Length: 202
Picture 1 (tube, rainbow, N blue to C red):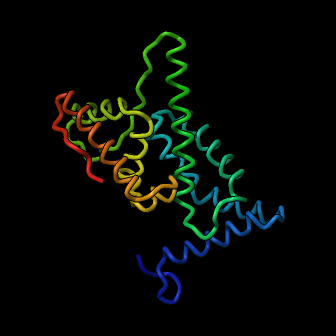
Picture 2 (picture 1 turned 90 degrees about the horizontal axis):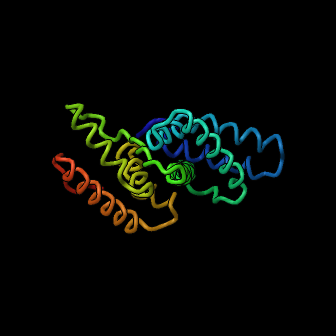
Picture 3 (picture 1 turned 180 degrees about the horizontal axis):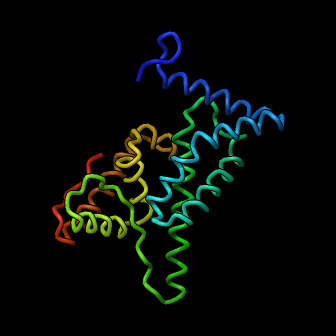
């Protein structure tokens, strides 16, 4: 994407602005830190909420998870590397919050002696038939939170492999392998439900 200042790409402008924002948060001056964090909160609130809503299939849970994401982010800002892109890190924090919430939900259902109600994640935006869409949602719900979340990051939020790797503190090769494994598991679940399956490509 181009535009911005004097031919500089918009992505580059955003990256420079975010570096300055992180620098403010790490400055040690309360006013600057509050100002910097407010920018981050306003820039990423909607995206974090949508991400958690897809993973948790629960608006109230997404609201709580969004607040928890920014609480954790606020605690971590002083120690993160401000020279690196911020978005992958923000979504990685949100992903961890979602995984914790899904595990707690499953544990709570098990303690009550009930079957854990599957969280539905809408990653098939172009499903033509509602039956097929429901089958895909059910297949996703059957996956472990780690597998479900990486598929959402890649195929719903459109994160590049490099961005997922950055946020997960691992290599691109590791991300690719995890996506391949998650895609294979999703394909098996789809086949088991009578939907044409196969591996979801990274």
